[in-house]
Length: 258
Image (cartoon, rainbow, N blue to C red; front, side, top):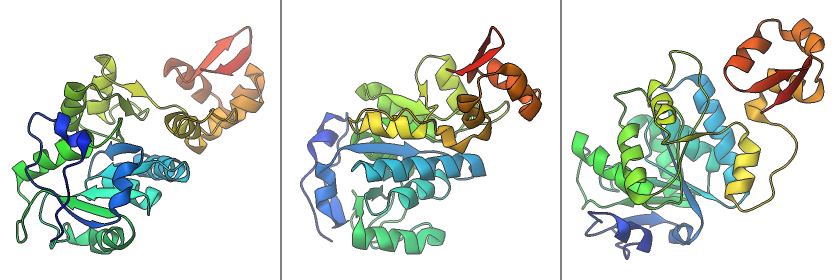
């Protein structure tokens, strides 16, 4: 199994890997990188938004790093492919989970697979935690697509906080993704309200003025129609729900995006 030098980003960890194995395009390690993690059993909304965000980042030559798992991880890899790095919790001769076999194989051929484990090493609960520190440690920022209060993704947030890496999360409705909401309440994360603007800004480009906001029909409509009565005729009480959630501002019978 090909061994590579430890990337300088990982040397800032309290416990950097003693060895690192790689299959694929090692030059991806030299690019600007962002970590994206989240729930394995994520909502369709979360996976769709993360896949779109990852695609936009990839188009801006930003490499997306994740853990090769189901749910948010898979959406991130698929959206960014081939500009993506999967860090595994097992050795590189084992593609796990099996449901992601083709995805991981494709990444090994056109992206990059990384692991700190010798051949024939299977994943354990502890190795997933250790894997998370590498995913975060490689990157300049962390995006958590969705996470419950007991989610392993919150451990990734802890690694990011230790390293001074900014954390970003998606907006969610009541009773959804309570882990990321907790990070917001504690002032440890920022919300992403516009996918394309976030991708452009992270890549160092001037953000576009056009609103994308995850193809949210309410926000798209309000961006083009500021009259409150017009918006109410179209969406009814959803307009006031969006105001309560801090997505829009209503003043003098006009609606504006925040």
